[in-house]
Amino acid sequence: MTTLTVLSENTVRGAGLLGEHGLAYWLDTGTHRVLFDTGQGMALLPNAARLGIDLGRADAIVLSHGHYDHVSGLPDALRAAPAASLWFHPAATQRKFIRGADGRARRISTDFMERADFGSNRVVRHVTRPEEIVPGIWATGEVPRINGFEDTGGPFFLDEALEKPDPIADDMALYLPDPGGLSVIFGCAHSGAVNTLDHIIGQTGKMPCDTLVGGLHLAAAGPERMDRTIAALGALAPRRMGFCHCTGVRAVHRMWREFPKACEDVHAGISLVLEGAAGTES
Ligand SMILES: [Zn+2]
Ligand SMILES: [Zn+2]
Figure: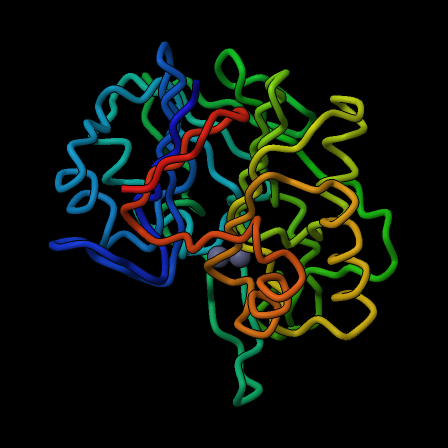
């Protein structure tokens, strides 16, 4: 049985917890613990303390990609968990930009990630292929971009002149191929939700689907992408889906309409039991 607790998310419910535009999850398999992403850096430590989670017990810290809303809490996380190994795709340390609504470049990487100095004692692992981080928890590594209807979800670039598009090769998800049901935890799904799910199922083979959570970056998705994403989710028929963070209100609304029994509200502070057991929310 693995418990997933949301430490950072855009929304929050519960006394004394903080919300922020970001994501961070704590996974506890009973024998191992993984911190997946670190949020924007304001919520991680206070929410972990409030929820009674000792980040110092982390065996591994995994980063979904190098954007500030996922890695800004990393310095705090590394200080809190000096023995944890650190896993990310090498492109997560690139300088990264987005074109803002005013047409100007805005940097969305962090100094700390770009420096890539994580201390001489830290075990740092670059993940480009599917890898088992701790027993039962896998990272996808780089996700092949197969489906023509999916893109990175926004005007992302590698240069301040906004000339070199960023494929966000660093984007990856975690997955738990439990025999009781597959669970997938997305960061922002810049690779595309369907590309990511296809890649995972290519590794695990077809199996029942338990839980899908995280950001799908569908705010700018056109009708074809929305329809095909919904069709792919419908075909997987997960027991539970909790799309949040960057998914976009329009996409979340559509999912709740299409899958009213499976959809759950995901906030900072909730805990979900993965692997086909009855989920709990606190
Ligand atoms: Zn992102
Ligand atoms: Zn994000």
